Structure formats: C-alpha cells, structure tokens
Length: 230
Image (cartoon, rainbow, N blue to C red; front, side):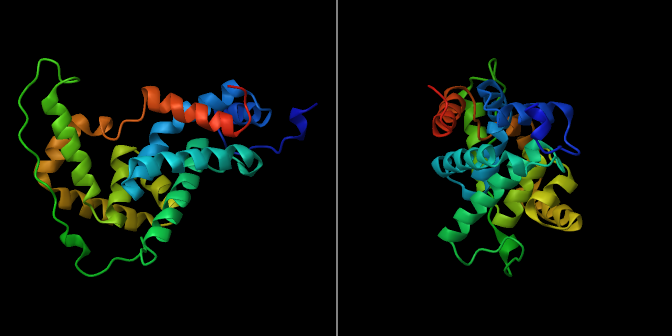
C-alpha cells in the first residue's frame, strides 16, 4: 500500500495529516487547499518582516516550493499552518539579513523604543464601510503605523494581534521565550498608543489583504513551479 510507506505524522490534526498525505501524492486539489488556507497568513507575516509587497509575495512562493518539495520533513509536532509560518519567517528573515546584515531581531539597540508612530485621523461613520474611502484611508494609516514599529516589536505584533497566534506559537516561530513575546507585545501596543489601539480594532483584520486575484495568481504560479498542468 502506497500510504503505508509515508512516515507517520505524530501530532498533526486529522485534516492536516490527510492533506499532507494527499499533497505527497501530488493531489492538486490538496495542494491548492493548503495554499488557499495559508496564503493570507504567510503573506502578512512576510510583509511584516520585509515591509515590501512584492518581496512578501516572493517569500510566500518560496515557502510553498520548499514545503511541497520537502513534505517528508513535516512530522506533525506542530500544526501545518505553524510549520509553514516557520518556513516563511526563516525565508523572510534571511532576506532581511541579506539587505541589512546588522539586523538582529533578538537584541535591541538603545533608543529603539522611541519610534514615532503616525496618529490616526478621526473617521466619520459610513453607510457602506467596506467600500468607503474613509475606511480605506484609515486602513492605510494602520498599515503604515505598523510598518513604523521597530522590527522586533512589529513582527511580534503582527504574529500575535493580526494573525491571532498564541504566545507559545509566536515564541516557537520566532525562537523567543514566551516572556519576551509578552514584553514585546506590550511595548508594541504602547508605541501604537491608545488612539491607535482604538482605531485598529475594526480594520486590522483587513490590513494587508491577500485574496481574490492575487491569491489565485500566487497559487497558480506555485502549482506551475511544482510541475502541475495549467
């Protein structure tokens, strides 16, 4: 039996294990399902590190190519989403270090907490908030304000607040102690200030969108690189 030869995935959920097994057998539907479930998170994480849309997309592509060509390395010690996030983080951090060799996300230079945070404009109520220009302007300021956070704090903020990962997941992915994650998140929130915190709630889940045509385009590009028919 073909599946009997696949190494056992010890702790992964049933859905993860099934998708991984199917992806190992080059089931295109499974590969698409994995990407569509993780595209947005991986893109946000990569963009949070690199602060560049096109580079973030490149990171997501490379993450999937590495993952799908080395699926035997997924043992289920963490969820599939966490495993992919770790690959994306490593890829993005590698690019950041090549751009800025002195960067070290585990140590902070004196004065790094003194980043200036852009103040949010007051937003007026809108009859159609999803399409309103005012909401989009606020969203852009949210993204800009997050971009202005120092690297170490920005990545923790995006991982914990925007992606909703718990302290343990964040610590595992970033290679930090849970106490350090908590401290950096607290400082990041302070830097964004009370005004920013109030404004961020309604729109933060729409920050750095990655859906629709962009999601489909990236998915198709990865499938092509993996040798699936167009």
